[in-house]
Image 1 (cartoon, rainbow, N blue to C red):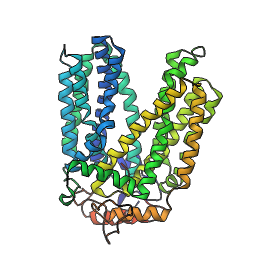
Image 2: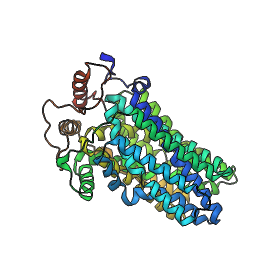
Image 3: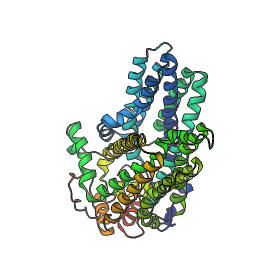
Image 4: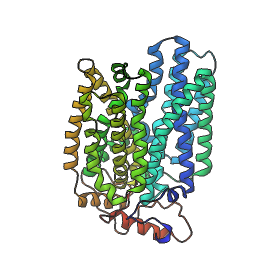
Length: 473
């Protein structure tokens, strides 16, 4: 480990990742924001139901949090590209803090609560896009991929904690739950402000135009570059089937009410995917060497839907949960590596916008997958629907794996991105600038005198096969 940096031939350690002070602050603030998001969902849903006794309105309160990604995620993420990422994250947290305080005011009319909640959730896309674009400026090499795995696993755990805590606190008092949620955003904003170095935006003035055009450039850079398009297809395909057990858990549990308690069966199935995802992200991210992770991407991509095919046999809820956990494990094993390659092949000035495109696409695809399979399950049995849907996923993932770009093409795209600050998006990668480095000029180094050497080392690791270090969102 020369100069205290991890070798590209072995995975970075958790200690190396957490040694980065800024990362610790960003992760802690992110956990607070994630828990706050899920606390707010649970609290507002219960608050609306108590005020109206309407299942439809309470469901609408829950679903509103997804609307910003569906109706304007890429556009909102472009805002994060235009402004310094620290300022975007702090501003979004403060906006959510204030609006949640207003929602907590007793006697607030339900329509106004829904409007305020929707307004608060508009801060989610730019905040998450800014965090995604900031992370590669804090962590480098394989530490970045391990950091992504930690974020993904902790995010899944935060979802569980947020829902449980939100439901428990809101049962006693939805107002108290909303006040706790507001406090999480306040602490998150404080941590980001005090613990993250101020950096200028990576989007250069020459590439500024108007918001819609800049958003369109985000789509063109993702789907116009062959390597980025291949990664996007792989990620979107994984989302098509991995969400299905969770989305159909309630109906699935209802069919096996005689085997175990219906509520318990639903909880086991819904929790299995996140648990598998947590384990997969931590185990593969920490124990598998970088080059091996890249080699495992395509086998894991095919294995993930394959694990759900045995649902055709109509197994018990416990077996369904085990299959869903295996699927989550496989997806978590491939996604951080795919994200790492994705960010490496992105010019710096497009990270936030590309994140908006990918995050919005995943939200839409997951929602459509659950909707379509739910409609099919009204006519056919759930095991048949999930089994055949997963079989189609095996075929889709096999095609995606076989059409994966050659290593030379991936390396060329990464080298081109590392040598261009913000090129015009085009189907073919731009030519690299000789001698360039992918470290922003303002990024801090671990110790005096190491900046230039670290930049050169990371650039060599980035473009050398097969032991190339990885980055990630």
